[in-house]
Length: 464
Image (tube, rainbow, N blue to C red; front, top):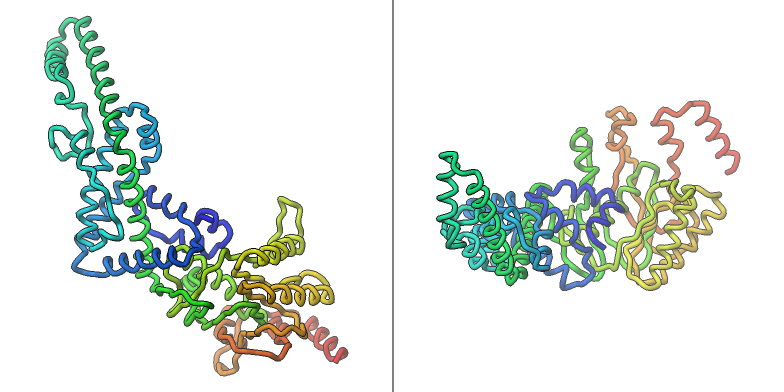
């Protein structure tokens, strides 16, 4: 799957992509066409390329080369249409010949800058000197294109005569004849140049591809520096130290709110996540999903340390979404997604992230569905995270609980705005087969009607 498809499925990953500072439309296209990598060697190769880009961009001695390369990339255009015409032997016009000349000259300048950055092995650019020679026969070194007199022996005399006639208001019929002859010669030159350039289609396409990738790679390196991302490593399971969610963390920083990264380890099978409302369970799932997409698309990840493994895909059922276009209720949409995840785990190794399954149906059937989901996911080679408010599930899967509310801030008044200050978002092992019971307490903090809360407490006491 390509990045352009992944950002439609994961808002956190879309936030990452939206914050990439690319210099060109070609670079953005290269990014969006990049794929979710499922081969161990391909992922390592992408990370090694990013390692080199980070090293080069952080070297203060290379700033001139870095600036020169970015300047070249700002002038890069997407020439896929022009190159397709060239490959099909369609004669190019003067504008298209200018585009080819500009690309060839940019490639030469970028090659010098890339060598200065020590990235020649990472970003090998082809030599397009022959293309420059064809399109700059007078060796002007200027990027614009003109059908020079050099291209045809008749052009020089014709143009001089035409200029003299126009300046002295000469014979209109002679001027028209000369103009027609000039147009015919220029069309002949364009055809001849197009035929000659067709032999360079492959290196021209490679130059554009590599320069677009250079734009993408430098934007990745810049994001690593700006966000302080960490280089992940591949292993047999998932381990994060200080995992954080970029979208939420940056929002909290803008609002002056606290943000707490978390440590997490996941292994094959199901990890059940429990915790109070507002304890960050959904954010945790989204954070893990976004980090995995970043890793397998060749990015560094938002964590202090990270070890991950290779999956065929990241599959999610997160949030209370309604598929109104298909007439599906929230439950129907949710169960459709979960059913698809379960089926896929029989043939694919997934990172499956499921948020509070069956929460919108009755508790008896809901609990039965959660038990069944866990049982089936435990039998496959995927890694699954499932959050739930259901207790007494009777399953043997690994359990983690968000620590939740703390009591060590007695001097700080508790309000809906600062409630995050009173929550410890870290995870602890919990094999109690029970879930936290803090719904009424949170409702009280949020200013819920006192009579409503009192009746709810009475109802709980009567059932105990």
